[in-house]
Image 1 (cartoon, rainbow, N blue to C red):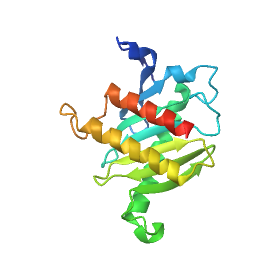
Image 2 (image 1 turned 120 degrees about the horizontal axis):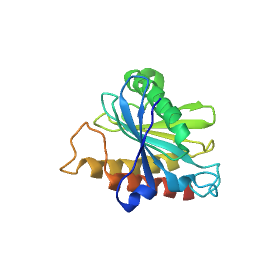
Image 3 (image 1 turned 90 degrees about the vertical axis):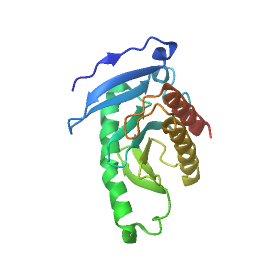
Image 4 (image 1 turned 180 degrees about the horizontal axis):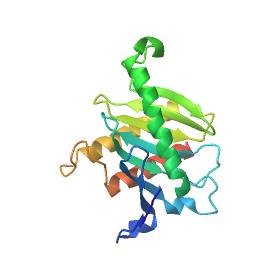
Length: 192
């Protein structure tokens, strides 16, 4: 897998790194990782205890095309997290297409815990336009209320980003403002 570091000319290049990965389906994916959160003095990547940590957030379009993915761990984990996000789409589709098996979640945008994997838990959220939000966390005792609050704030940030008149619907979200806002939401999730 080929990954190259892209640098940006502004001061945000110190805090946000872009890496390009080619996923197993052949599509190129831009993965953002926060280098300031990878310092050795912050064990969890965000400066708090490692028990409650968001390691990845993603926005996936209604045709299962990745619109945005941000990793909050080391760059080596970015491809693994991309794979976890990709695999979670099958669970989302199963819950949406088989409402009898998934219970009364048909009208609910919060899909809850999609599945646990290794040391992670994967949560999902589905918008009215069938855009999916995926959250991967290491917190094994996270409360649904906290995750719902996170998704509510993440959805508001997403709506603001796609409401930009220069954003092309269905294309990847490349807004630095959105990336910074997501980082702020993640940090506040950890503090709660």
